[in-house]
Length: 153
Image (cartoon, rainbow, N blue to C red):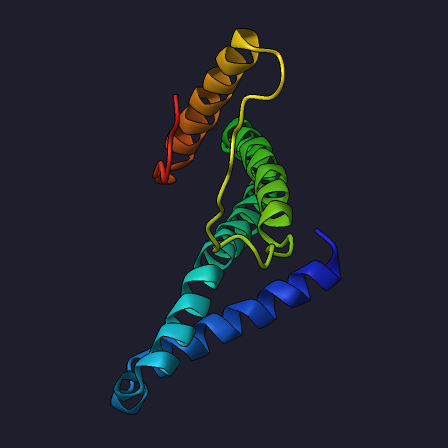
């Protein structure tokens, strides 16, 4: 992993620890808006920080396995541990890259989706029904709620 990414992850880990301390203080819990804001930031950082801890543990495991390669009795075990740690590191690096992508400002917002049958008669109406079912099932898979505001036959 690039040094700049590791530095960013260290800063995020420090901020996560700072937020943990702040959230345990009674004066922060008195102001609910501030508490909610800090708690949301803490929750957003948790996944990244946990992956960074896994990354550090895997790097340590790889270094330990590398040291054991010199011992003839442990060489086979050390080689398998080394390769396993290397694979974990590659997987974690990919996950961290995904977690560090900037969040969309609209991720927490709801939407209104209007589906209308256009010109085309019955075929258009059938397509609109299929489209609604497709979006509804997708929303269910994503854990989103669907509420039909209005429907006309």
